[in-house]
Length: 488
Image 1 (cartoon, helix red, strand yellow):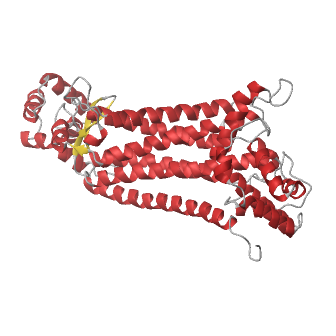
Image 2: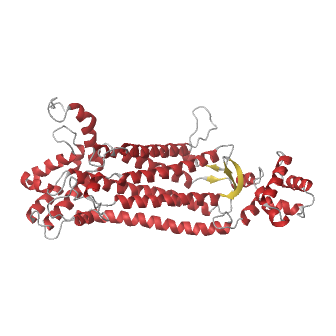
């Protein structure tokens, strides 16, 4: 940097504030993918007779001879604008400038850069999907062990009706499945090759875009060459998928934090995921859940920042969507995956206080909805009339939510009812409340078991998709780095 003059490119302040950072980011995130792009493009040029086989062999040998650990330790000194030009200089030193210069035929830094971003984003999306699948697997296992664990459900943060813990967790598994579907769709949009678009308008050389796309593990082309360079929705769609997933995760974590309070005491985290206090010996702080919450909030904020950075920028090649944006994308994915993995670990060893859940489900008049339904069935009342009558009963009982007290108050207010006290008390039983809700999507154990079977099948589908796409990318990379037969 000391050799930079104020008149020469790059200006010291430009190098310090932009180019040095971009160089480090590129080494960390893009180096191997950049070399894979060089390999794919070089081999395509030879197959299209745009360069000779001898030149192809020389270029591939130069690529294979690069000292990657040394490159990763190289500091930016201003002698080359970016990592691309630095690698190009190393190839020129190895193969000669005349041969090395042929590699750039029919392409631009523009399509190379967008290809790099897409190659990185698709791997990040697979890690995100794996994090979602991992958490979903833990919750399905916990749900399967709690299909008959009666618990109070809340609406507007107030006790509402009995359900089961299994029913609740199956609901969480549904939004996680939709998160996985959104990630899959985003992957499909990302995994399209822009290579061959060149600066914006392709090239006059007879390149084969499908060949390089296949070599790099892409599943199709970003066809229109202008949009391949200019469109940013491949990454904003991924950011949107992250944002929705983190909102879902945050809502779930908030419940878990409430359930961990002594005032609730529904669940207890393993000692491995709690911390004590420096002054209060009795404390068991559920810090793992707090960290998962802030990580998910950070990822949400970073996803929103990605969208904000892309907003109101031109539909064209523009730095706002390129090197300066990518670190934010990396951080967004990293924080989202950290949140998912941390929560998975914490939930894998969580203890459920089934007795306390059952006790709380029988309190606070949570089952009077079923008593209203019973009045409709047995007494021929309209639901609105039954609802109003039981509202009077609840007010008459005050804080006494004992079923016998409720039965006595009901029969006192409406002595003409044919219901016996025992029938009223049965209607107020939380287990009965759950059993009778034997509707698709309901908490009845049989229905929940059916839902669990379907959810497990969906889990296998999600995991199979992750495995297949990971194998696709791994196979492409392995195949690309193999020397063609007959080449030294």
